[in-house]
Image 1 (cartoon, one colour):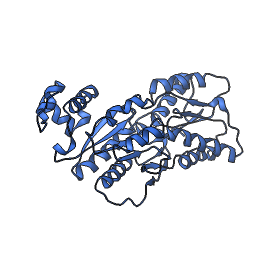
Image 2 (cartoon, helix red, strand yellow):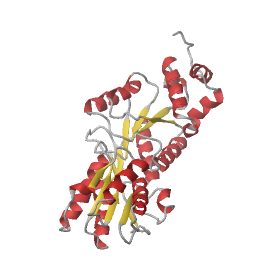
Image 3 (cartoon, one colour):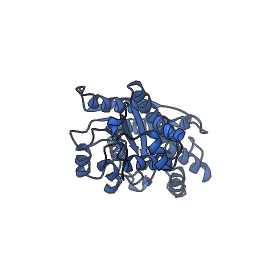
Image 4 (cartoon, one colour):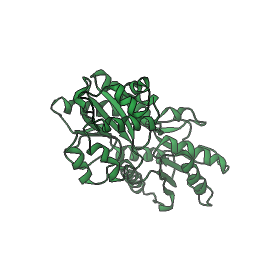
Length: 326
């Protein structure tokens, strides 16, 4: 396709079949634009062979497994504030099939973005190596063993262990866990912390009480918990790896005639706004979501500006917030 020497936003908007105003919002307020519209805009950039050097403001991309999970709201706000402060454009992209190597082809075939923030696992070290050869990378809320990829996260193992120890301290002995898929590093570390806390307290680990839900989805979690709580041998507490799961657990308990926390205690994770809106309110592990986004974005921009990175492993602290559900 023949293109002009300098690609303009008007050309990209025309090819993407969106207005110039919408194109501007994709650049400056991406969360106000529908996912399919953003994807068409990115496609048009690639078709026109847009190169970052054609804009004064450099562009970075943050990819997410979903944009529905309320955990990501404060994370995105932190990234956006950090990017704006240093005059970068931040784009958001949902990679639903993040386990699929082909999902990353658009990043490997083009040079639209100066750097990438990943908030999800990447399929294999070969994919990470390929991305590193194309872009500076930072991971947010996820771990990688690749020594060249910095990350900002929490100590999921210790945070989980702390939460379960709290449940044990209030007399709970038959504790269930509602977990995410092991694709995510946090799910593996939190489950390890869960089982170690029980073993160290001399309590049994019941494999049938550890559930994995395919996605951080309220309906899926509600269905799983309703089935579990309908069994004759019920847990006396549930440790959930997200507040979305915890709210579903509370609703499932009510559905089968149990009272929270009298019959069963519920502990969440994240401390999103939802946790203080449910009835009862949710006891939870509070993690610094805004700071995860802020620091991961700054870590990427430091690389882009050739600022020496003091540490590639930034671990932020967490707290237990006790509310009505325990």
